Image (cartoon, rainbow, N blue to C red):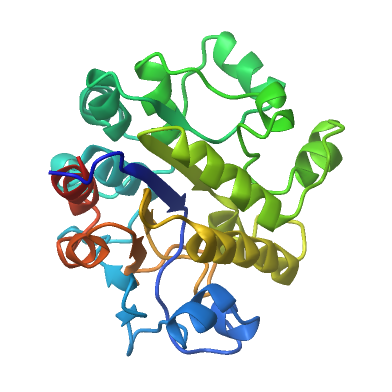
Amino acid sequence: MGKPDQHILLLFLDGVGIGKKDYDWNPFFKYGFKTFTDIFGTSPHLENQSLSNGKIFLSGIDASMGIEGLPQSGTGQTSIFCGVKAPQIIKQHFGPFPYSTLIPIIKQQNIFKYFLDKNENVTFANAYPQVFFDYINSGKKRLSVTTLSCNLNGMRLNGYDDVVKGEALTAEINNARWNTKLGYDLPVITAKHAAENLLNISYKNSFTAFEYFLTDHLGHGRYDEDTEATFKILDEFLFTIFTQFDEEKLSIILCSDHGNVEDLSVKTHTKNPSLLITAGYKAQKISESISDLSDIKTAIIKNLC
């Protein structure tokens, strides 16, 4: 049984693995990452994948699930959010969007639906710009696993007004790219402020998810802004969450679908273990029960619900 009045925050970072201790190509070492160094005393690498400060637990987990080739987002994210070994189902890694035969599984088995079926408050904390709503209103459905899960189950998606009210976050955390790339006039906030907003959102819902995909874009070399500055924003955001959350109320599971950004010497995904961090109620037990991506949903439900 879960702890009474327990809230759950699932932080999904796209394309973050545990790589080599490399100060040239691993940005977590090159730029420093206080979410690792200040909380755990060091940064994880392939020779030191399991870290803990006694309350927060970090480890590397398998993203390949017995299938050869480089893990991909479509199958990796389906595995995380639906609790299935998606690459084994379709006999390959596939992405960035989910393979067509996985869509019925996503509709029926995604973790949002689990809480919706229990009539509990659920939210996907990401906000979408108007251009996205124009896209889906045109009938196009090429969506990521998270967005597709919400769409197939009738969940309301957040927009501009929700960001203004502090009830949703833009994907880049601080609102800046909505202004520079999409023509909005949002207040640019600090990563700390955004983290505090997400914590407040989490305390109002049984289950909250937030997706950050710029790490994957950086790993692919598709991001046109300063890598170090982007990492500093993410670091401040995560550091605030893990040092300010109320451990009596909130459990946090941070995970990723495959390796990528931890090795900037290549512009492809990697076979490195995916990053997992757990904090809050039963954090150690949850961490120890997850060996690959497909275990995440089950571990959350079994230990926290």
